[in-house]
Image (tube, rainbow, N blue to C red):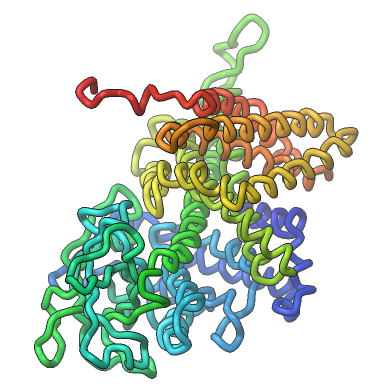
Length: 610
């Protein structure tokens, strides 16, 4: 119930999502319909996901040479999620959707991530289908996306290769036109793909009747060579089982073969695979090898199309990290309230004869709990704010929608990276609260930490997010996104100063936030003043950390402004905000110093000196 109360506060008291019902797309909805969706998802997560989080961690996916075997609990959870309609919740009615605001959909999915992130919901399937809705042909939308939204099929994204992880320009999977009539196929220009893809989540399983792979590959030049770099990359939809133009299975397996499973530290319930495309294990009726794929969008535009799914997935990864952090927080909080240990110092020392106190009464335990609360609830607020921007981008007037797009561009690297770093730290603190018990498998904390450790890696590592932020996002359109963020920060600071008489902390925090934004803006300018890109980006990760802390400080100030009413929950939010401003925000000075100075200590370290 604690999570539900937090979501209700963020959705209704802070983000005012009921106001969205005034827009035509959401006119059929009300708070009652939003609450009904939240109630349903909370129940399914509680009944079908949470009780089996340890089961799917213990019973890893197995490959018997022909098929992937998953626990029955995973099948039951997937079926319940698909039946809920959440896969198509934000879609149009004529696509079988509910036309829910994306922010409500995100809040509802938070219950599943908290209950068992490793069983998962439908992040990849929905992202796959959304990409096809944006760039696919009408037939591709009806055949592939519609079946994914219904839960009949599931989806993946196939980017990395064994020799090319994040360096997508170096992929070698190739796609050649399938016959002289390749361009006349109703499902799109038809190609045969050959290559290998690595780290493919949900790449093979028996949860649905088909799996829709979105695959990056290169179309060879006339001389047979592949164009170097990302400009030669195209995007293809490659089903596991061949389908006809009406979306019916033909009974023929496509030439996509499971080469093996990756055995992971965490997220063990989610299948992760190496896939071989076109190796000849499943040739067509004429005996020809090659995985049949259909071009999505224009040739050579594959990476641009895939970024639609990647950015959506990055926000989803941030939400997953957030909910793991909050799951650990709630578990350690409950433990701290009941575990007796030690005695408080009073007067000249401790009274050895006094009864033990619960560990939540110790200041250092409160520090660790407050840190978890500040990280987790702050990250949740940021994630829902970003989801609200998606709704603005889709349904607001043209000017507001474009501003939302630019803000989302700047905030996406933070929405992915900040929770994945600091909610992982929250899980570490949760283990610390339990002490030795936290390090055992008798409690769920160690699993939360293992599951969360992946989030700093997948969908773009910290280093990639940092270079994207400093190298591109804050500079795009001549810095317009950064200026828009500055305007939002300034507006929050102004409101806080006006209301400082209601809570003296507001004035203090407003000034600290204003100073923090100015520090970030100054460091951004200095990093690019008279420096080459290699110098400017040498300390991109410290920049990302400082930028993220500034954004979270702004988020917490916004939450404070919505928490001025009396009540223990609002007092808890204001105290968490005070903790963040006093314990966390001062860290940005050290991070930004090396950024502003373009310190080259790390870059100049000779390899042999290691």
